[in-house]
Length: 106
Image (cartoon, helix red, strand yellow):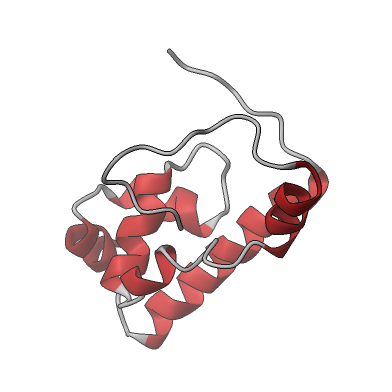
């Protein structure tokens, strides 16, 4: 099932900025788009779309790029702290997700 998300101007700007930073990281490492794509295991158009901040780029492509650049450990840290969510939980309690056996509560 394909779904299309409608992104706000702010979200589109975040994608553009991510793409710009991926491009800069690639250039700092003296990699061509073809070389980066080979290391990521994708085709060059995926790298081009990522660098242009196009919304259709999959999360997997972005994660592959971060891994190639040596930042895979930062992915899990994205929501390591969630002060807004924690504040909401404290105020009203958790209403949806229950706990599952053997699953860490981050």
